[in-house]
Length: 269
Image (tube, rainbow, N blue to C red; front, side, top):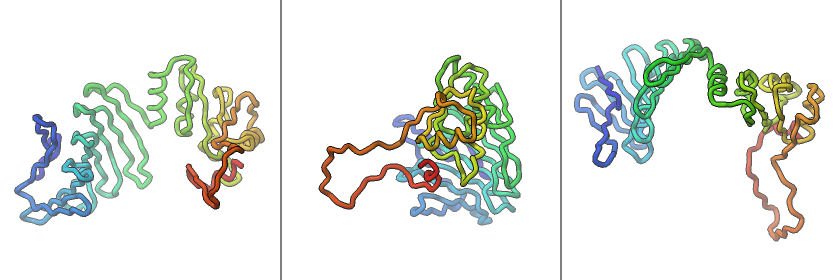
């Protein structure tokens, strides 16, 4: 069987801190320079054992995929940072090419988090476990519970919090600290003619929100047509400026665009 030490097949030369690759003599190694990877096979049986991907222009392993008899896809992946330290191990279902568990390690290679998933196509996250110095300190059913725990641990009463990720809205709204959340809407809250589900919680709880930052007055009015939110709760900050009138441009039919094209932005106009 293929043994797996904590740094996989790497070691640190402490004289210059350079991480080097230890070649294996008892396995056949197939190199693929074009894809910066190597494949390992059992010398006697030809069984595929390991896929190893390297960082570009480096001998440091980025990740390793392990294979076992009777399963076509990988069953385990070891991932390393650019200095060669292990930072995550992921186990995969034998039946489905879906992850079952993830284990996260700090720079001292101490476990600090575990995540578990359903063995289904939906692959729903079902548990998070937090460790300190290798000891379990807390557990959660999902990431939103973890976010709320993090916010309550780090925030103080009257802290002003800017948030532009709707995934975090629930944890901020449910925080036990008397914080002042400012929600930044950097895109439309509409999907077609319907309000996006991800925006409904924030818009249904204006008494828990200090301010809504939106891009246009049109968007503000659209929100107020569907929700009873007073003017003082809004701040309109456009993500564009009016061009100065005194700029002289001799070039024709040229322009510069910074940002992204997205169909959803038509609802902001």
